[in-house]
Length: 295
Length: 227
Image 1 (cartoon, rainbow over the protein chains, first blue to last red):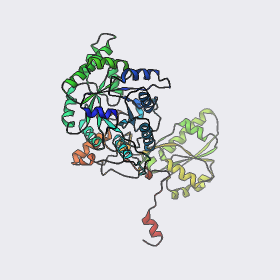
Image 2: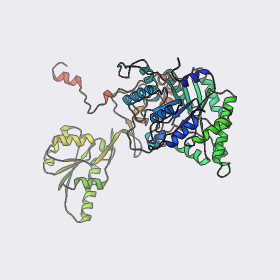
Image 3: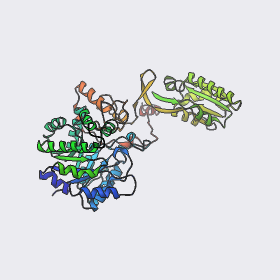
Image 4: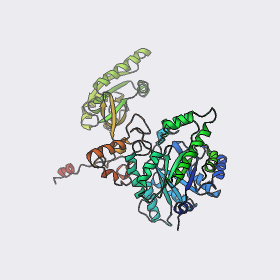
């Protein structure tokens, strides 16, 4: 039996569509709720980010509870930056008990890129160890080797960076994630298809689902800023130039156009198993992208 | 070696404010090499403090100076017992270990830190020191081609690079090399990439709880007549 609705979809062979919502800084959840309502029925699952870019926000677990309450299928993003193994295990037990059964396992951005630069970076585990820890919990044991009263069952995933400038070390880690039990991968942003194609030629030997990450850009300036400041983002100059060619005030439209074009190409060429759309604060444009891409 | 940097003069002035007679105590080992608290720095600091005092027209402090070979070694503390008795406080330019050894040795004398102890490292170019060892108590350098991911990766992760590495640099600091790219390249050069493909389990932090103690069993055995 599938561990979650999302796992069932992953195994169905259909082209998968996921998107993400980023919780706000503060307790006013109205905008996040609006985004969840807007997206929940248009995607196969909805990620909730975990203090993205090391900026303190309402927690991923809280956002996932809202997705669940509103009838959506959440993917809990878990990073190793802020919690040691006890806290991570406990959060996962809570998640499962509330029907949150999909987890994206990430190491987490460095504290230095965020808004609490003096915080203690934890990194008691890394992403590979986190994946294994979840499989351990499923076996009925915690990391200390103690018995659990009731074991959780999760559909687990991880990230991979097909466009990394040094791909070989990333592939070594990708294989460790596969061996650790990752079932699906949501990639870092994909802007040109060659790197994705090369990556898929290699990755297709593994029994995992690859969802290509699509970051929606709103302007050339945003792309440049992300290139310089957001870990893992590498926007090619050709894309920046294309964004810059947009008429004044039409940057986001151009960004949507690029996203739609990329998704269509991925689907038509059957490059991978689906897409993960990251609108980074502009979640309201995701339905338009999904529709225009014919998903 | 241990690397440190001298505290700002204003902070030192605030620390010594309550004390009349102050011994500025240097260290002849690591602090001399890294230029934070050797004989030369003791002398410079002495002059700077005297000059600052003269500028304000006050005559609050009387300074003396001395540099021992190693402040971290209690043996050398015995040599300055007389000097320590004559002062109201010791301003130590030793590392954090030196400060504490002095404090343990002179229970009635306040000992103040004149440097911020930074890390264990090496000189990589003139005037540049880089951290190399985190004293984790569980050395894995054999598996990582002699490059320490615990020290040199900002996240200290064990199973390969995160996705934040760009142009071989770290996402936390674009001037710092990504440790995992260095490890990968060196393992490749040594024909040992299989070491990177292995899974490394989470660290055992039981080697860390502070304070740590190391008993040299060989020496202890000898003292008991079993060696």
